[in-house]
Image 1 (tube, rainbow, N blue to C red):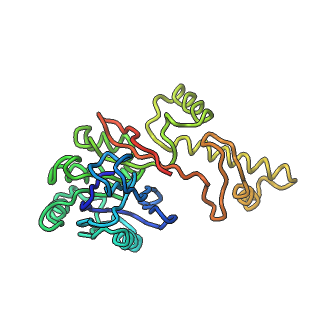
Image 2 (cartoon, rainbow, N blue to C red; image 1 turned 30 degrees about the vertical axis):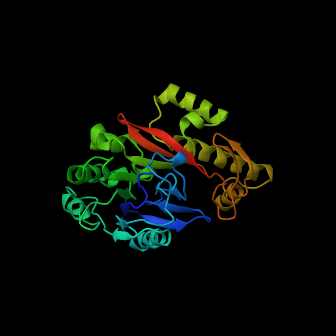
Image 3 (cartoon, helix red, strand yellow; image 1 turned 90 degrees about the horizontal axis):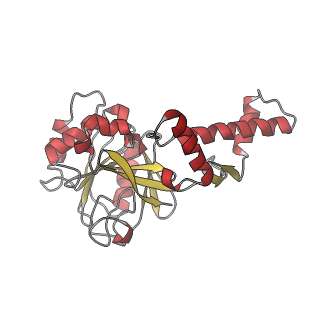
Length: 288
């Protein structure tokens, strides 16, 4: 989403793996973002066809000027991200790491600001969580290279938290993109909307995206324990319960109806992209 055709980008990913023919899953720690091929600007608020819409639609067929890669941890998997970006038509213009305990990142951002043929990249991707000084990294990026419409800033669900916005400041965070697995709350299933209503009635407005996953995970575990008991097994046998968890098919929960596949992954594929607007993340698109 943040990159236009012929754009450059500075990436700070954690770990990366290929997923399917038309997408890339970039994981910051255990976090995930989706990058899928988009050749039309119709569903992407960028200026032209062939736009690089990282985290929403992505990777131009050709003409990309440059992309840089950096990592807070997981150099090997960051290398995979770099290689895949090149395979998808990007030119990598940098690959750096960060110290999450550093007082600031002005030196790094100064370096990035001239990494693209003497100028700044069009966007920066960070594979990190808010606890790893993500807000400070953004503040220094804006200080050195301008706001997030000048040099785009994007990351996985590790920065899709209100704490990230509050830490950087609403004005500084304006325009940042973050991706989260699953649907936006306004698009939850009926069961999901009931969960949301009950949750907010007790705890206040939902500001963290994975509360619903914790609820679903507990229900899955309870279902597995019930299945073990129903088959005459021992519910204190962890191996039996684990086996029953991964045997679950067509689970009709708050996330919808889904199953575990042969790799232990769910069959849920939705990824929602959010952008900071007026001091809060707002959903801007959902991809499969």
